Length: 263
Image 1 (spheres, rainbow, N blue to C red):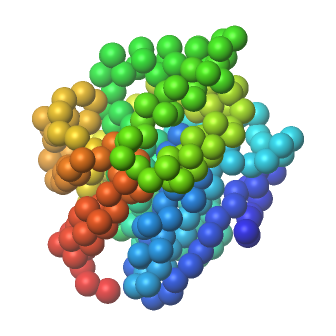
Image 2 (image 1 turned 120 degrees about the horizontal axis):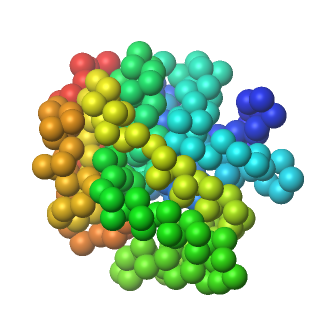
Image 3 (image 1 turned 30 degrees about the vertical axis):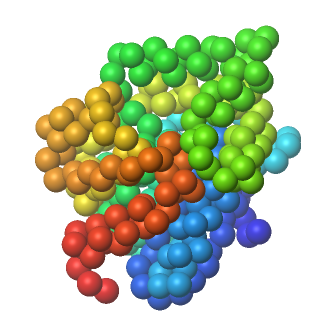
């Protein structure tokens, strides 16, 4: 798989398709591009799709010791887009990738055409969410860190997901060193999502796995960004792009058709 080096950090990517809009797929915490497979397979038929592997995917001793805050991870995506000549992309991020997309739009307003956040991490974190992620980072660095992470990851996977895909999610997410996984979580607790949501001027779609309160509740986010659109899947867990792509893909297509000018 091709990769580029940014200040010594190797960033791998997959670029497929041709024509149509540029789409950039950004994975969530401890995930990689392979967990976007249904979206990658569908959209490459009509668009140019770039799926990125964040810096935590770098193997072995080449994995950087730092740079796991949301701002730096967004900078990585922007840098990769510029190196590849990706113009006006729709950035589709899952989980933490959704936070990265919003940060990217806030700090680089001329880059993205739109942002799609698939069951994103806390875009405007409640105190409870901040305590949870900070506490989880501490536990990952404790003596039972590996077991804690595996239980947490398995709890995020819907029990109805095909076993092969469920195993893939667990294997991918549990392959990242625990100290790196903890640093990425801590990076989410220091991110100013309130400011980023207010500065995000690109059309924004937030697709939630369930309708409810918490950090990403519509009534919490709309005062920050009145133009944000919401969708809610039926019968899915956190990995909605794997579990119910037949719901997620039409939502994205409808959003692109109605929020952006025709290409």
